[in-house]
Length: 140
Image: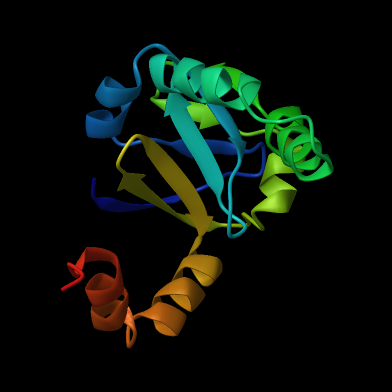
C-alpha cells in the first residue's frame, strides 16, 4: 500500500521504493493493467493469476483479454540502483513520460503517469463515499 512519486528516465528506468522492492522479491512480472496503468505482480501472485486464466472458458472475450494482458507481460528484476526497466510498448500504453505514481493495491503495485493518476483521482474523489457504500453495504 502507499503512494510514491518518481520520475521515469528516457531509457524507461523507474526507481521503485525500497518498501515495495522488498514485497516484490528479486523477480516479478510487469504487464498492461486496466485503466491505462501498469500492473506489477510478485511471482507467486502471477502464478495464481495464470491458474485462474487457465480455468476461463474458451470464449472470444477470454481469448482477447488474455492476449491483451499476457502479450505485454515480462519478467523483471531490479538493477543495483533499485530501478526497473519498463519496455517501450508498456511505457507507451501507460503514457509514462516523466513523473510516475506508484501505488500499492492489495496483491500488486500499479504504475500510473501522474496525469492519468490525477485524472483518476479527480473523476472519482466525489464518488468515493458512494462507491464504498455500494461495495461494503450489507443487504437488509
